[in-house]
Length: 527
Image (cartoon, rainbow, N blue to C red; front, side, top):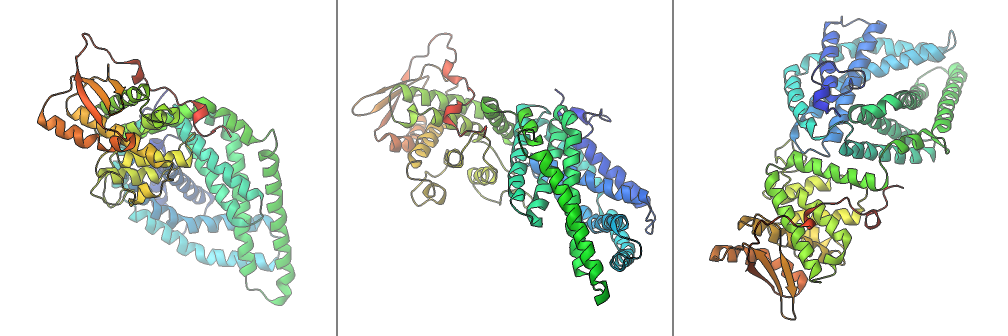
């Protein structure tokens, strides 16, 4: 399966034409057309250029918003900000063009309301076109090209059609479906407008990340988006009609206009309901094409792995610490050291957290995370801003985030804001998991490279952990004594580390595998 970066290497094929790099190049192409246009040009060709430029920008900004949830690199946010002023600078002109088209289409001949609205739009369009031209001149095309090159490389962390891409598409699907449910319960404009925006993000995510799905769903996605776009247009036009200042004899015309717009809006919503409700709805077809059950949970783990790859400057170190942590967990489970170590969910949370412990967020002004001295705090704030991946309940996600937060640095205290906000029954889990990661990190720092043949034995007085190759030095003893303290708090007994002989031709233990989370122990993600 081609990645986004390979899709953008040359002019993409039909399936890959929505790749991020291609959309960013389209922005520059349409921008040049608009710059060359005459300020007073009101031809359909000029309207199309304005529309195409806004669509290209929206595609880029939508995908950047999705990718920011995986990759904390500030270039994603910079790209969205770079295009924001241009996008909004064209918005008023495009709205006026759309409204003018609907007025011509819906108004009867000689209508007073239509005449007033058209005069208002005609009077303002010249200024709006000048404003749009000014916005195009201010746009920094050189910076945009530099961002395109940077983001083309960053996009490789999510391969098109990969499980991580499916997870991101599913999250956009779930968001749009939630707004769908809200909109159907009311006739108010805001939920329908929010549904329209959520559907656009879902559509552009599928275009960029799941090109094979988009080839099958393209027409249906466009049809639904057009229906919701019409609903929004009628809401905007109805507000203009209501606010229009007309003589008393034109009130009958205003009432006729509002009735027409209400009828047209109701027709679009009825068509939308026909397509999107019931057992044969498009929602069901799209949901069937997205991962479910164990496959969805595997996609969620792949999404976290993508974040780890994108934001971890030392992935080999992280992998070694993760292997040591899982082996420690398994050894303590066999020694019946505590309830947490017998819990399959806790093992899954440890496995996920161990991949994220070295996520580093660029603490600049443009970064999603505020500047902070602690990398753990910065990573925690970045991860906390994300929606929990499918399969993780909010409570489980909070435990995972707290584990990442406290795997190094000061130990969690009851007065600590992050730790104190956790339910009392979850705090021991954080101590056990964060303590395991602390000890694993210290063992790696002491030169323990292999995670095989660890053994823990429990007695009435202590738990003895035998570690092959454990160095016998004052420095190592000091590091390990500090690192095991949090784990000892959970265990309620001393943890004694002793060296064990290194077995010849030692190999990694089977515990080091990282299986897909068991669906019985995570939240039901198939609903």
